[in-house]
Image (cartoon, rainbow, N blue to C red; front, top):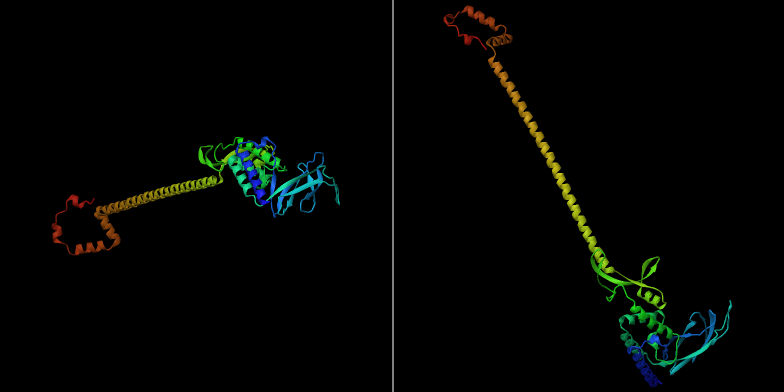
Length: 373
């Protein structure tokens, strides 16, 4: 069984690589395929009912080869459910389903008006299938490959287990088909960053500031562009909803620029403070010099005034000395009399008692000498 499964897988893998790498547009034709199950391991697969009436909720009875029958409620629009299968050492497992009426405690659920079945191939590993997907993604190119991976992950398609060349059909077929088609459109739509790496590139902001920028996706809300993730943009692309792109400065570049700007502002502030301090010190020095100059002028005026006062006092004293020296002999005598009134009497008595012969013969003094000035 295992050798047969390996040969079949190798053949299907070759077809998958040929169809994708050969440039065939898978979205242009109906895509078919089915999951491959790993033997003796739990596998989660999707079962979907084709409901074409107006039912919104209905009930399915699902039969799995080798396992107990189970029931599931499914809802519009896809009427899908996921079930777990643990196959034994067999080549394939058949799963079938049909509508079954269900009566619950609260309300009854109608049976889905449909029935169907599918067959899952059982393999020992997925190595060859995963290699085929890696080759297929490599042939798509990085941008589309990333988009397709993301789209399939958003739709919960386990593509690394899915054989797109299987003859069986699957509810995942249209999801894979849609991912391939929408991602062609997603990649083709022009981006704000052009051909540059959206993760980071050199740019110039308005005003001429050179920095590092990154691209981002966006949606318009209330007239404003709101950034969204690439996954959200791909989701909107899958759902045919509008999205846009933009360019912004990277967080790291913005943080570095803001740090440099803060350092520059701090430096400018320090320079302004130093300048203001120097100006204040200069003003204080000027005031101090002005005060010292005023004090010096005051001292000089005081010294001049004191010198003038001393000079005047000296002049007064000199004049007074001259006056005293030049006063008349009579005044001197009067002053002597004032000091000693008996001096003249004594003098006269002496003169009468002992006349001096020389004084009698002494010539009279000249007029100039006898008349004091």
